[in-house]
Length: 266
Image (cartoon, helix red, strand yellow):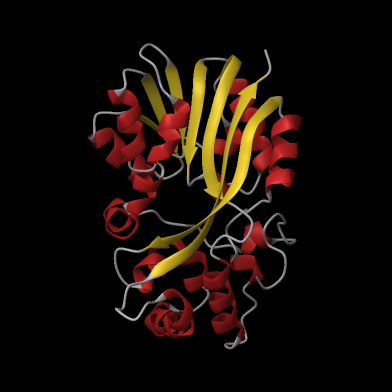
C-alpha cells in the first residue's frame, strides 16, 4: 500500500480525516456479510447462560443478538447513534459509547469484537479500557482488519486521488496491525494471548464495488466535492476491475483479517 499506514497515524491525520457515517440500511445492503463472516467468533467465545458479555463495536446488533440468544446478558456499544438505534430496535441493550474511552469496571466475563477494532486509531486506549471492563480471567475474542487488509482497494483510491492533486494520506481511516505488533499491545494491557493469526480472506461482495466504497471509504470519497464522487467511484472501480472482478462480473474485496483470543491475567 502507498506508504506504511498499517500501524501509524501520520501527523494530523486524525484531524484531517472525514467522519465515517454509518447508515444501517446501507450497511445491511452492502455489508451484511460482515456479521456472517464473524460467526466463527461465537464458536471461540462460547457465550454461556448467565455470563455478561460486551460486544465492542456492535453495529446494528446482528452478532449481539446471537450472543443474547445463547443466554448471556450482553451489552453492545458503538460510536454510531444510527447503528445503536438499529440494535435497540432488535430489543438489545445497546449504547452509544466511544471504545477509546470505556467506562466499565470489572463487570464482564468476556468481550467480543468483530470488524470494529481497525476503526479505532488509539488501540492502546481501547485495550486498556477492555482490560478494565473485564473481570480477572476474562476473555477477549476478536477479529479485525490486519496487515495488508484491502491493500488493492487502498492503492486504487490513493492513485485516483493523487491523480487529482490530492494527498490521500490524511483520509486513511484504519489501523491494520501485524500480529506481533498487536500481540505486544495486548500483553502491555495485561492480556495473555492464546492465539493470534492473519487470515487472508478474499470476500465476495453482494454487489458492485461502488457499494463497498460508499459504505466503508467515505473519508476518501469526501476528499472531492459531492458532485464528483460518482466519477471518482467509477474510476476506482475501473482500476480494480482486472484484479477484484471475475469474468462473470462478481466483485470481491481483498480482506486480510487478524483474529485473536486473549485472556486477562487474574
